[in-house]
Image (cartoon, rainbow, N blue to C red; front, side):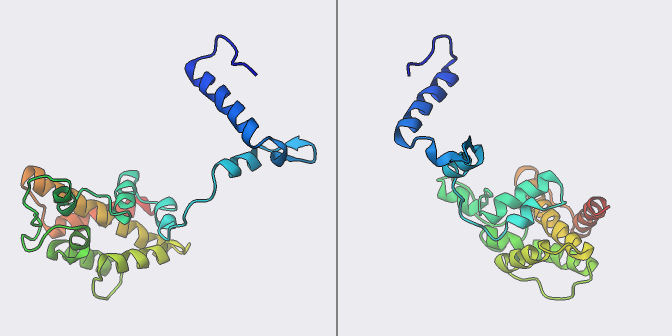
Length: 200
C-alpha cells in the first residue's frame, strides 16, 4: 500500500515500517479469538531483557529522585570516577580527593576510602547496625536484599544506602570542583535528615 500524501516525516516512517513488518511477519500471530492483541505485538517487539539483581533497589526506592539516579549510575559503574576519566584519555590526577591516599575508582570511593567508609559506618550506627563496612559489591547486595522487604526498618536501610552514595558523590564533586569537603558529621546529619524526610 503506498504511503498517503500529507503525512509528517515521522508518520511516513511509521507507515513504511508498518509495511515492512506486515510483509515479514504478518498479523496472524497477534490475533486471539478473532481480535488483534496489542499486548502480544508489544511483547514480540520488546522481548524481556536481562534481569538485574539491583532493579528493586532502584525502582522500589523511596529515596529522592536525584539520589536514586546517582545510585542507578553507580550500580552500573557509570559514574565519572577518575579512573574512568583517565580511560577516556583525560589528563587528570587519579588520586582520590577525599582521602588523598589511593586512586579513585567506584570500589574505592564506596567504601574503601577512609572518608566515605566513616560516613557509612556512622550511618549504619544510626540505623542500629553494628558491623564492619564491607566492599562496594557486598554493600550493594545487602541493600538489594533489604529492598525486597516491606518492613519499615529495611526500607529505611535502603533509603540510607542510596542517600549515602548520593551525598558521598556530592562531596567528591565538591572536592573536585570547589576544593571543599564537609566534615563527616555534617554529611551524616544531612543523610539522616534526608532519610527521616523520605520515611514519613
